[in-house]
Length: 157
Length: 68
Image 1: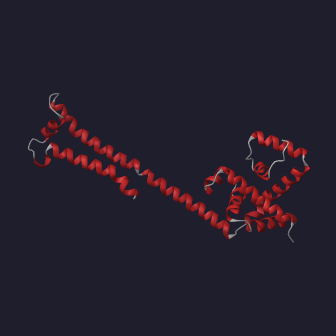
Image 2: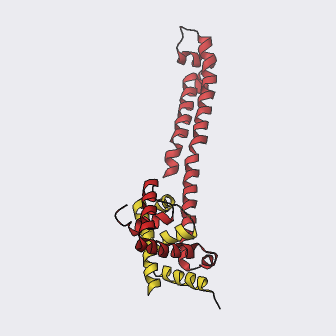
Image 3: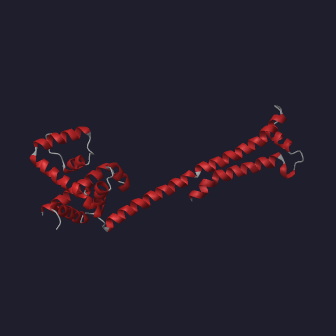
């Protein structure tokens, strides 16, 4: 490195946040340049002071504020992820409804044979008609499934 | 009587309190909390380069304050 490293580079070097190439160049330069070595020592003194045991007694209000903010932000993140986690139970509920619907419909289809339509097969399940007719049962299951699928949309508002 | 090292720590802490909030926070997260630049960038919601310059500016301001 022919140019002097910037303060930013010297500072990042202390933190081990320089790339390997930049780090090697910085080391080579600091060895050959007393001015940069002195500046580096000053920056290290500041970093070391803050990292020392006695610096832990730093109980200024700003520290409390930062920690409180970090805590509240991670708590908010946790709440957000909890909200996202509702997707799985809802998907499970929808799948369960679909499975129940299939369990009801499938035997009917099998009984109805290849010639009979799905609707006719369901209708055949409840020969008496009325409220328990196949069409009504199918409509009920569809409404229930749609309602569950719409649940996340309602909750996020 | 405090030893010279403790005196330096006190002086650095006093100077750190005079920094602007973003600089002081970045420095605190780095040197007290021990977070990486990436973690600080995510927390302060700024690019990595801003974290680098904030920490460097904070340290330089303290170095200059100690020289006085």
